[in-house]
Length: 323
Image (cartoon, rainbow, N blue to C red):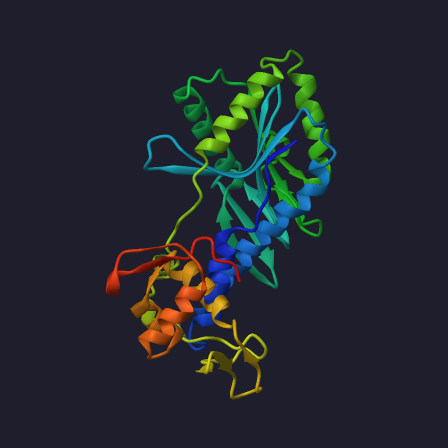
């Protein structure tokens, strides 16, 4: 039973907009492309697990991308959490290709790919830390803790996995996607006596869902950028050129002669992902690259979104705006 479904991370959407609007020759472009590729691969890895998770009986409760805090300062994130009456299983999902070596001595994952090497943090250590944090969370909530197991699931079928130290702990903790159901069955046999009733389990799931805190990171801070680094204006939805010119209520593209009355909707969505959900008339003029306050007022009014404040201080809430 899926309690919290898998959704495309907002981070991917923000990175895609940033990549689209960053000047092509910007020094940060390659770093942004690399982060986007990594985040997208992680999402695809979790998505590929949905097939295997679908074989679990309804008695298992599944929560994707759970982000919790214990002290309102430090947060921990779990890719997939599986709840049962017998145990809790934390899944750390990795979608990495190439020759993968797990090094327990220095707690690192080494990838050999295209004649080069890349080092990643040790996922076994990562999931162990998530377990520790989840125990603290459950204790704070005064929830009787179930046994907690952990698994690092490698979802890329073409990856060659190696255990450098032949560690039993790593052999037990690291698995491929196709082994997931077998692992769950093993844990059910290990913990034969149920600790929670289904009613109790639903309460725990409800508490976790209520305490989930979506990530609200600032994409500019992440890459040390500011608004001057991005291209402003309405982009052509047909050829991608910018900025479009607005004439008598219609946006025109001088490159491909495309015209649209609603091309600004995607631009507002870009703004929302980059800068937040509130916007003023002045900010709209700057981002859409139009000069007339009255034209801007008409555009903002046509959105039919909540507004607050008066006069020049009026702000518009874009949170529920759809393209």
